[in-house]
Length: 154
Image: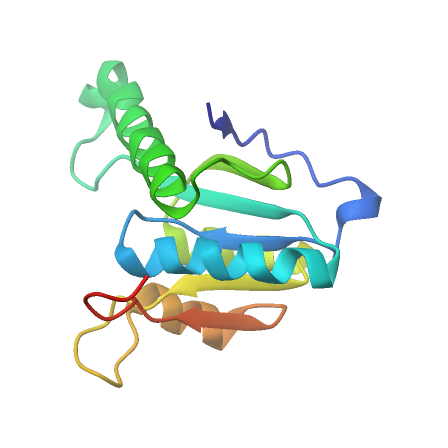
């Protein structure tokens, strides 16, 4: 089961030696998880699979009772993405649910990472999506943008 973010900074030993992967359940984010696994051993870095969730704008305070539904849905997406990416979850891959919008959350997380990996969900062959674009533009560590595999590729 994924764990909720508690806002506590990572221990000093892991401040810069981790790979963070933005996970949204897309084919590109599943490919990003697989790339992270391939890079984790050579970089001697644990992998954190981050799924971001938030209450959609406009729901206001009236939704306070239903807030867990959004968190649960994000957890289901994260768990399914991990299952799709790996036959068995590697011990060095740690799932995290983090409340907030993906772009600012991942950019902030990049302060304490050695690498940030995101999938490309933009439309067309050369256009990156808004999250990957924000990460490339504002991250505090190197960013790897992974394209979804073409149909038939694994």
